Structure formats: C-alpha cells, structure tokens
Image (cartoon, rainbow, N blue to C red; front, side, top):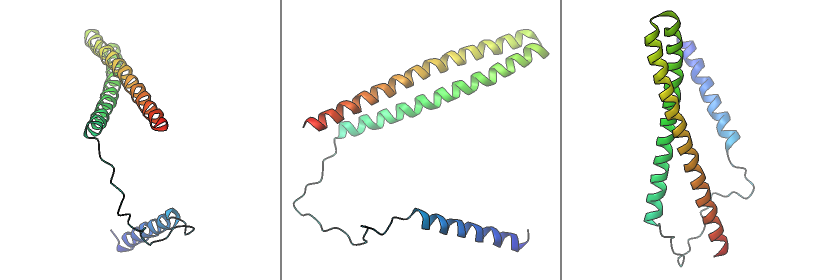
Amino acid sequence: MPWVLVLRWLVRLAVGLAFWRVTTRRRAGGYTTATPPLQRGAQRPRVNARAAAAALREGASFGWRTVSFAGFLIAGAVLVTAGLTTTILSPRWLGGVLLGLALIALVAAGFEARALVRLLRRRRRRRHDQDLRGQLN
C-alpha cells in the first residue's frame, strides 16, 4: 500500500479528532480550571449496600431479558425463513419441524417481552416512588 494513502488517512483521522475536540469542549463562560475549595465539615454520603446490590441485580436482569428476547426473536425469524423455504423446496416434514420450532421461539420471545415490560414498569414505579419520597423529606 502506498505510504501516501496511509498518511492521508492518518491526517484525516487527526483533523477529525481535532474538530471533534474543538466542537465538544465546554464553553469558557463560567468554566474555570481552578478546583473548588474543600469543605472540611461536609460528610460524604453513605452508600446503601442493599440499594446498590438491588440496582446491580436489576441491571443484570434487564440485560439478560433484553438479550434473550433479541435471541429468541432472531431465532424465530431465521427458523420461519428456513421452514418456509424447506417446506417449498425439500421434504415437507422438515419444513414443518422448523416452523414448529419457529413458533416455539416466537412464543418464548413473547414471554420475554412481557417480562421485560413488567420489569421496566416496576423500575419506573419504584423510581417515581423514590422521587416522591425525596420531595417529601
């Protein structure tokens, strides 16, 4: 590969990064580089271990539900395509088996979607309750 092309790509990358840096930096109005004075009397907020564990568990559950929903949905789409093609072009029993598996995968995706929606509603309600409690206290 000619070195001129490599050099051109590097220059374009450097110009793009410089442009990104200039356009995304903070504006100078009210922004200073000096550190704020330390407050000696202020206490650090304590971390609630149970709340942190619950948030971690909730995030893992949300991620797992999302990945499993996407996996079942993709598997269902692939199996429907394979089942229809096999039913038309090859032995029909194999196409029927693939379409049956597609139906099972799509039903499982539906259950995962319902569980995901329930999880999101529960999180929204809990956060709303926490906001209300924070405003009252």
